[in-house]
Length: 292
Image 1 (cartoon, one colour):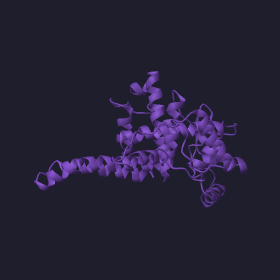
Image 2 (cartoon, one colour):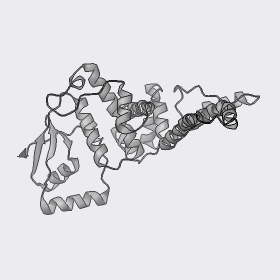
Image 3 (tube, one colour):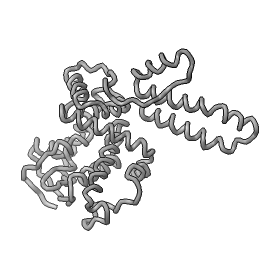
Image 4 (cartoon, helix red, strand yellow):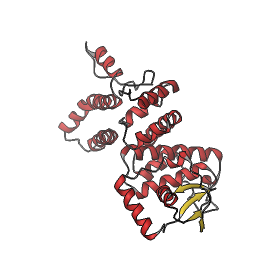
């Protein structure tokens, strides 16, 4: 650990992961540092700041000395996972921020495993534990207490935000901080749209013209509702509906298909097998509720 006056590198990909402090919280932190100095060291990796952005900003503005501590990682992906773990453990995150973190964690972990580096075994530097066997989505689902499907959907959301960030880092920041309203499901659906479509949406957000329309060429789930003469019209309506509505329709449709069997079992007193079936539907509804 050392006191430093060296210029520190700010990496936008890492910086954007940190939720902005509100004005009052930032003011209180500033007052504390002005009175007591910067007591906690800033964390660096290869000269890049990876923890302590607000403290660094205050210290630079008021010319207050600060200390730094260097951490060793083998790749940017490992730094990313370290930052994510730090933020998830210490902050109250919004649903979209938490989904973004989980998606980034999944993508970084997959990339690390593809390199065949230290995530395949115990790190010699002791920064991370060895990964457990099994699919990445299942392992992270256990860690974050969600389903593997949620982890994979979060990865789609993170992919979309990365593409939006390439067009405008400021728009990506505003989405993550809730300054631009767009649902998680809409971001997940955009991940399968052409890059030009995502760029167009980002530009609409930048100019204030974004109205929340569905992506033109995104892949849609093949959901259906019942039969009858209105089936075609219902299917057409669902094609243009929000992803949340399509998911709800699919859950209701599946439940309706199983209802007769469940009713017969309940009526005959054979209800033991119903609980896991009902629980599965309840889990789907709760997952949809969390995503809205």
